[in-house]
Length: 102
Image 1 (cartoon, helix red, strand yellow):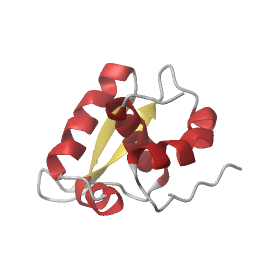
Image 2 (cartoon, helix red, strand yellow; image 1 turned 90 degrees about the horizontal axis):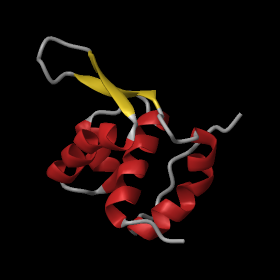
Image 3 (cartoon, helix red, strand yellow; image 1 turned 90 degrees about the vertical axis):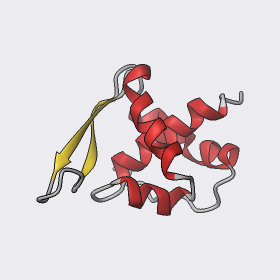
């Protein structure tokens, strides 16, 4: 079963936020190669699919900080981790994020 590319992108961004250390927009751009606007649109849309994010302020400027998944809503993180390679393949990404499933 193939997911909508937009939906797959949103899930992948959420997984990156979960597994990267201090994920912010520049780091997400670096990891995916996607334009800033694509990343920002995906972040804005995550609450629409039930994934709750928070921005942890970490600096003096208003945009210094990183994202954190507060609640996965209807999604099971263990299942999403199993889908990771399929998501990357569907999105045309070559490098896999490293996931510790312990």
